[in-house]
Length: 85
Image 1 (cartoon, one colour):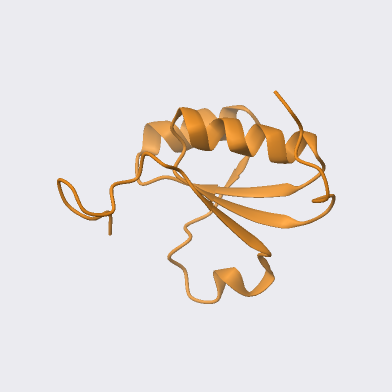
Image 2: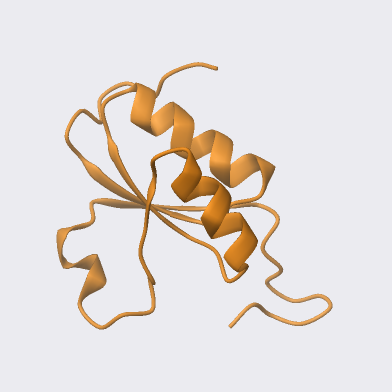
């Protein structure tokens, strides 16, 4: 894994915790970022929490006030079979 550089202390939201999303969260954390993770799937959230990641519902009002960046997992459907809510 290659740590993400230039994000030390930066709060970064990671939406989607499949293979790509969880790997992104790990790389961000290795680079000093503070990943805030979310997935609609409770098993995916549990796995991330087991690795020490904080999971927060990114649909909360005002949640992005202190978040500098958003990483969206490529596995989240935008159109087919239906858009992710």
